[in-house]
Length: 468
Length: 154
Image (cartoon, rainbow over all chains, first blue to last red; front, side, top):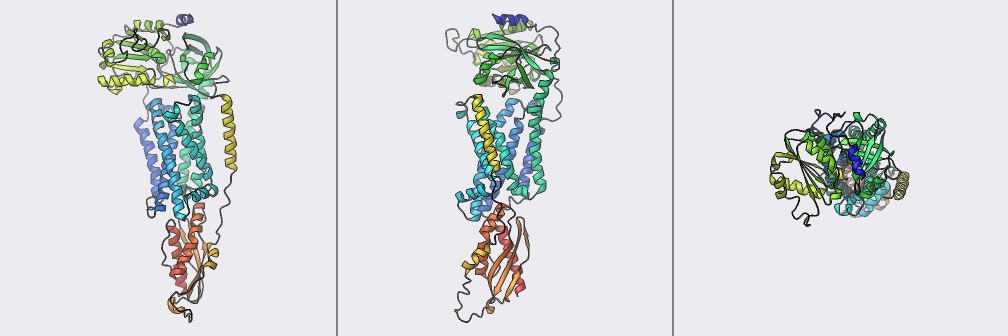
């Protein structure tokens, strides 16, 4: 079996390695500071509306609606910029909120933006129609055909609604990740198309030069973040390290490890448990990145990622050959030993979710404190890194529990992930930090169980992105 | 997503964007003196009560005949200025010299509000007119400019 070859070539975890884990470093701004900046700017935008008479317009129904149309537009568009910022892969955001935290905010805010912008369209059209005494339909037609850039803005609203609908859970299940992702990029086009009418028709900007320049500055700031971290950073990383796939090693049915080599790997700064976004420069997959955790600690020689066929495209990764070039960005993720708050540790892996835990295990130094790994998989042949894991656990005088089989099958007659099982396997679970990585449903369940046992959230660490 | 489907979608999107950018809104309509349309229809229908014979209009309001230009009133949407025509001691016409046409929204409001304000002034025979819903600033400025013109007519 080739997996045995891989294990033999795997340097032991013990020897000194040229690893330079990123220093924790003190953050110049805290998460609270950043939230404050976003809220303050939102306040400025609202203040601009008030200063331009937003509140004084509350006389006639027409004026009320028009003013409501303005404030929904201003706040909605401002939040749309925040949305782009959240997804700009800016390390200064990611380090404070985590990619999954940002993604949750992005999801919630995305629907808010869509509702606000839709409200803006309705309020403004009805408000204008009442103001000039024409029908809503006639006024809508006048707006689209005679107001500058309103046609573009109308298309932008349509795109925004499309992006929101395709992100509803119900629709998301029917679309492949790739299709959803492709359609999601239209949000950028929507923001760009809407820009013209904001300055040309928006009375807050056409009559106030300071407001106009402030508004433009917001766009520029967000645009620079996107450019720097979605374009500049990956380019610099990739040119510096010139990564290539050195070896492709099957680990289990449908699972391969990629050993990636390149220049100056010792200069890569990452902590075990973090992930990079990888772009495989092949004709079919160059256009997207895959977030994969490192499945071994940094050693200056190679990077290892271990991948299971998930989604349309990552199945195709098994066709990645030695020699395939990669672009890389990162590292991302807060799933590191840095977040450990107690000396004792429990690691819980579900299926391929073992990969960041495998790297994490390597970084937790051997010491007297207890370390336990629970590895849940449906079949024995899906278990990867078995020899490595056992070696690492032995060095650390830890314990490893395999929970293999389908729940309720003769092989596994009890519920493998229940409060009782956890207590039986790890009697002192309350006093440990628990790192969990696996399918979303499993993580959610284990998270719930741990909370019901009484673990505070600072002791529970989840990695949601390893499976994407 | 198949790469070919993606390519088709990208090309179609690019075409659509080009088309969108080539769409030009008609040049904003310049001050199209709204009163011009209305002046014929307005038929000053002088004094409903007074019997059609001896008009003796100067008694009613005491305006001197002539054409008076009102003050240029500034609003946040643009300037408003009117010219009031007095004949037989009555206000027979109000011509807008300036209405807010700076922006499409203002132009739309002016086109809608102009004729109505014109009719209101003729009816009231003074600057005491109701504010039009949706055209508050324009109405106020219009009334102010009419008042300034009438002040000269005394």
